[in-house]
Length: 287
Image (cartoon, rainbow, N blue to C red; front, side):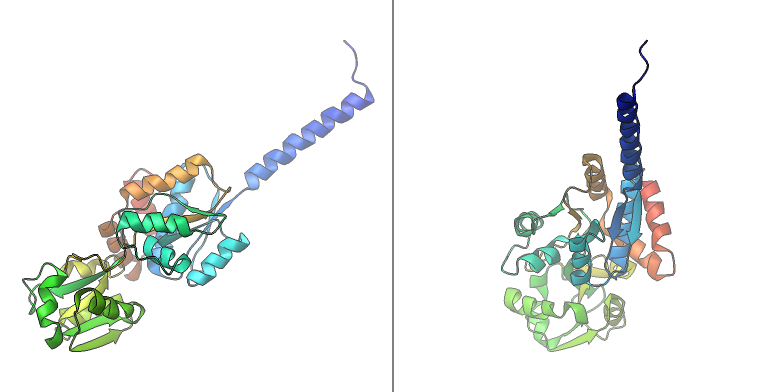
């Protein structure tokens, strides 16, 4: 057998160094899942992170980054690789001219409006859309659709969170429903409380962010689809995730329901850790 000469030895050494470096880079590659400031986004970020880990990914989380402008900027800089969002709000942030409201139409327009370098995959059945709700024992106890309350709007009080105040104009334009008075409150909990204690007749709620309290109200059917769909969806940087990692989001999309999300939001607001709550949900769904 011929002994390795100096040149061959150098080639072998360089090859070994290249393999070692490549392995180190692969091991060091970490996907960062970020989120906005609210409980919903933090929970879904933890769920996405767990789903990615279930397919072998190395994952860190960077939650509570700020509002949408802040976490979109973090995506653009490459500080984070994935963030959870809502289809309708994300679509509007990229294309304010879209009039799509149904889940499928919103998703189509969202995909058309995405900037280069960003993608979404399947949206979840879980949604956090605006909905009109009434108390089961109030003046609209028999109502099942928004149309049913229109004749009595003028003599009624609507309560709405500050962040959802635009819904007042949407109801006026879409249903001709102008309320006798409108009360604004800080958040979804206060909205639910106002209807429950009788200080308001009608509420605009978020179907998940209102938490378990929304179960005590009757959400009215938006027959004319005036409120845009707001399904949970992952937004991620192109070229960062493998096919199996992207597919893990689709598994979440098929399992996560609005009721699940509302219950988990209630738990976190009650003092539970979002990471612990997400981990339990992941375990229950074999993720």
